Image (cartoon, rainbow, N blue to C red; front, side, top):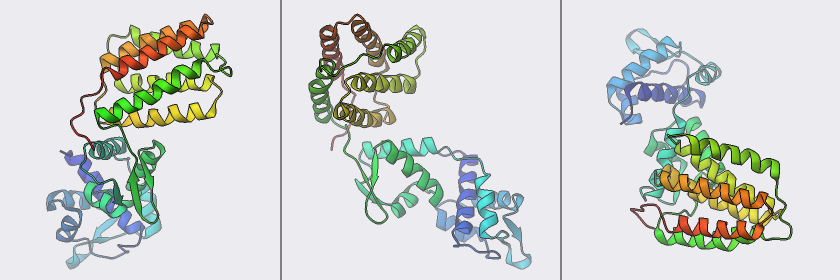
Length: 294
């Protein structure tokens, strides 16, 4: 459930956005009943938000008319830009998780997003842009968005690893493969640090796993291999949002990554490719605990 202060800030932001886009104009009334109905909340947080807007100079009491808009569009934009940001990471994670668990359709309009998650236009734009950058969603013609295919079943997870088994070990054996010793040393140092820590940060483990596989793909000097591995990384990212990644498996992966780097440093690409194959097979054999399929 959303904390009271978070909800109040969100309502303040939404009212300011209505002023910025011209829906509300200088002098227009700000009625608790109408706003609570529009935003789908009770009158209490709306009342608190109006009080905060008054403190910001965006609302003022106009005699018998009650609270009314006290800023023009330009001034409201400045006030909006100076507000503390909402926890947009949390909003993004919730949208991604809802898609993963089948609670939202694959194709959805911006209006539906705004109504479902109670978001203002500017906040929604930033959230959707971030999800698009991560390859989770893409824009359709007009005001629609489409979620990209993802790994949300044992079948799709297995198919993903079968594809990676065809690509990643073979990339190491390509004649074009050039081992980047300096880059490998930096990645190895980060692995060693994580392996020495008693407590592991899931997000950090996940990012390091992505970077390792993309690093090996980059050493192949084959743009198609890099593109394929980057796509698989994006697909797996949704598993992190859904909290389905096994931290124990990621810890083992770190150790296997170090073995691959050591083999490459020793110049034994055949051994490194074999370790990569076993590494991917082990990951395939320990799939996430999927609860839904599509």
